[in-house]
Image 1 (cartoon, rainbow, N blue to C red):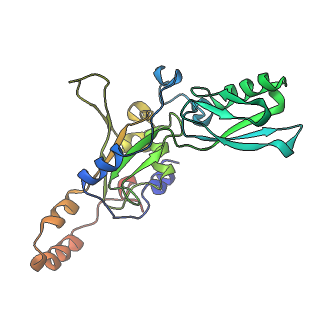
Image 2: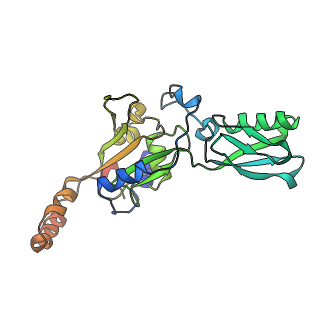
Image 3: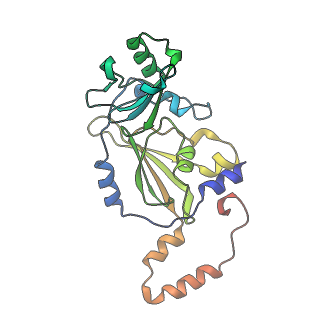
Amino acid sequence: MGKSRWKAIRRLSRRALPGAAVLALFLLAGCLSSSKHDDLPAPPPDVSIDAAAVYTIGCPDVIAIAFLDWPEVSHSARVGADGCINVGNLGKIRIEGLTAAEAAAAIAERAELSARRLRVAVIEFNSRQVLVYGAIRGEPRVVDYHGPETVVELLERIGGLAPDAAPSEIHVVRAQVGEGVPAEVLPVDLEAILEKRDERTNVRVRPLDAIYVGELPRTRIGRAVPAIIKPFYDLIVESLPARPAGPANDQ
């Protein structure tokens, strides 16, 4: 199982953006909304959790509302800046900070229905983001926060690592509230997580975390090699003995 998950993570892509551009993209990301649930301590990574079930709704998320007895009035609604949605004749209902199940209960109460006859699901996660950059598949980017996923789950969701990624150089950078408080840097031991099932460093991601994936040394050196001798450098790298078979170089 470990090797198959490793293969899923190490999907192909070599594109990258300068760090300054990535940080600018991060700072320009959408609105962040606070909620009562985000202040709770995250459970340890080895405890199974349904991220969608504990995700708390905020502006400008979009939810789908399904009335089981009246499917014709089912519809989608965007959470406004006031934390409310407009539910037709029921008027505005505040759902910011609620889970989908709690939002369904609030709407059902207003409609004087049993909560079992109504369903709510988040169809657009727009309110909170996570920055992922470095040697990942696709462009370094801001991705939607779907709830307290682990680092491995999030990397799998976005397509995984680039072939030149260094699995021993993955870190979660977590900003701290308060002036002058340095960011917390949490190392992630991907090989231990996937091969030894050691979940201690498989931290649960929080909104506004930044996940950095480092590159293999030969990739960093290769970019600094002058163009005139680059072909010779590539020839030398290709002639080096292959690394022993194992999870770190499975493709």
